[in-house]
Amino acid sequence: MKTIIFYRSSYRGNTLKIAESMADALFAELVSIDSNPSIDLSDYDLIGFGSAINFAAHDIRLQRFVSSQNLKGKNVFIFSTRCRPFLGAYHSPLKKIIERKGGIIVGEFSCRGFDRTGPWVLMDGYNKARPNDRDRFEARLFAEKLRWKLHPLALIYKNPVTRCSEGITMRRKGSDIIAGNKVVFLNTSTCINCGKCIKICPMHIFALKDTVLPIDEKNCIQCRLCADNCPTFSIYIQESFLNGLRIALRESFSNKLQNSYKAEDN
Image (cartoon, rainbow, N blue to C red):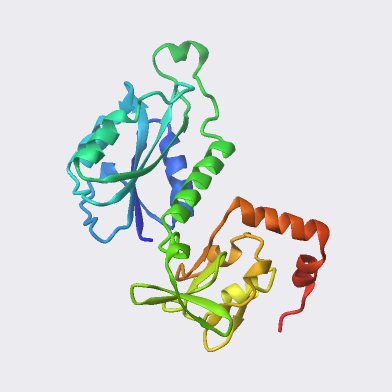
């Protein structure tokens, strides 16, 4: 998923800290609008816009920048740092611009940021040391959830089964062949057989046949190490409460998961 994040961080670097955390999680390009960027957005799957909240809205320069972009049909998320403890309607002006430009808002994030302006000079600033490590962690978590939500295989389990190969259920998505039943899905058409998933999976879910396949998805514990380390984003884990409950029950009342974890690589 090709992603770009535009930001303006003009005061204490508050917004930049949040933007960097999100960019790291999304493998995104990070661009300051202060550089007056001129970038063709047609090839991007996800676009982020963020700044501090000034006078109950995003930075006016960011608003003007967004107004100049063609966002028709694009997935867009917005973020901000703010002085007040509650977000309120501070995102509304930017959201209206994005919607007017044809963008699809898929998420928004905000956290507190240090402010030493106006009345706060009397107490040497408000929201000292914010954003902190927890704020940056929550920003990264927001971005990871967004990346997972927009994964190209997120709804593949709804596609009809076309055939089975070596006991593995197969589905089609366009011209791609997707292996997997209910939990672990692997796009065999984009997989490059690098073997990273085989090496990193603690439960030995994957094996190399003619191609890499998820041969034992019932043992998946939803750790997502395979998907997070796949260089071609070809793996998706269908996370669910029921699957989590299955894992907990099997771990509590049987030794199947423990034995799979302890098994030697074949």
